[in-house]
Image (tube, rainbow over all chains, first blue to last red; front, side, top):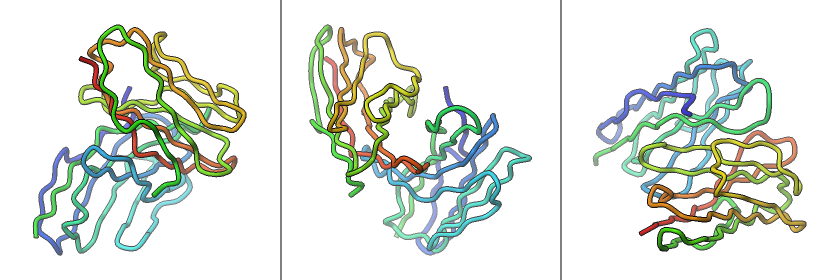
Amino acid sequence: SQQGEEDPQALSIQEGENATMNCSYKTSINNLQWYRQNSGRGLVHLILIRSNEREKHSGRLRVTLDTSKKSSSLLITASRAADTASYFCATVPSSGYSTLTFGKGTMLLVSP
Amino acid sequence: DSGVTQTPKHLITATGQRVTLRCSPRSGDLSVYWYQQSLDQGLQFLIQYYNGEERAKGNILERFSAQQFPDLHSELNLSSLELGDSALYFCASSGAWEDTQYFGPGTRLTVL
């Protein structure tokens, strides 16, 4: 079953613009991770944010986490055509084993 | 390149058949995870092994089984295949005290 729901399902922007994707989840988490998947290929880990963190940065990526609202957002600044991909959030529960539960993903298209 | 390898890349077979998917984790990683990605179900966790032992089970069908060998590579066996088993199957690995999972390139299974 899906834990997270990404919003929007699809996003189309121009190069240089910022892209924001949101993720909501249902249960208590230990951490939340964002992954990127280029068309039909493997998933690439982007960033991990723990439940006691509110914001994290990695290069052009900024992730926020609001555990009270059970939501997270991923911001990609100054988007490039190479950022075109599907982006998934995945949660690890606060209890039990560290298996990932994925959302349905946001498909991002960055046009030159 | 995540360091996780999966073979084969593509597999085409007929209904009722049995196939074996193979995964080699990153050097030193003790945990191996299997995920299935299909259009209707999205990315779903199947099963986790840690140092040869089954640790967690997700939405894995009884027709599917897995194991992790002493050299830490893992195999996912799918039997009595149905059309609905057509999907991308990913393997991921992680270190002992690590939450980040590193994904392989996947095996695309097509059941005709």
